[in-house]
Length: 155
Image (cartoon, rainbow, N blue to C red; front, side, top):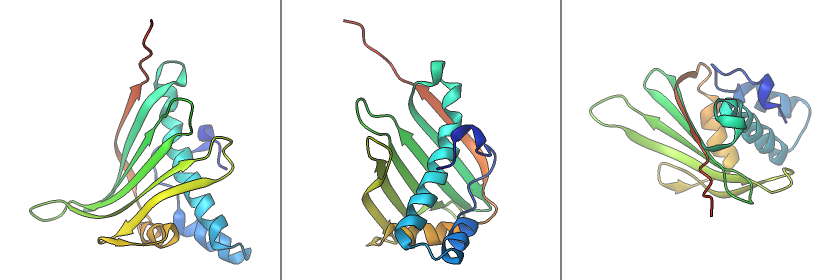
């Protein structure tokens, strides 16, 4: 998995390149999905250092290309792996159009992704199908981000 400190903070990971590499090396769709989700996770996690001691409650990043937006939210869960929500939205026209999304979490030991939901245009799809639509967006640039720190209650 790409280490967060090596991620380019200004650009969305090149899913088209990652998918092509997986095909070139004859890797299965599971590996392609794991690498794609891992690259997105690392890109957003690179902003964790903006929270005190790197302990964040959530990180929200918006990547844009024209009217297309990819919103990624990384939510830290206490005693569990972080949950990641990826949404594709079109903001052209008179209103925003939600195109689809994925909800996934990395298991506690970081060895696999647990996908709770993946959908496009109101239909349930595989994560690979959703990531394929994102790979068509090859010039996504960081448009906004917000890092919230984790609040710890003292008894």
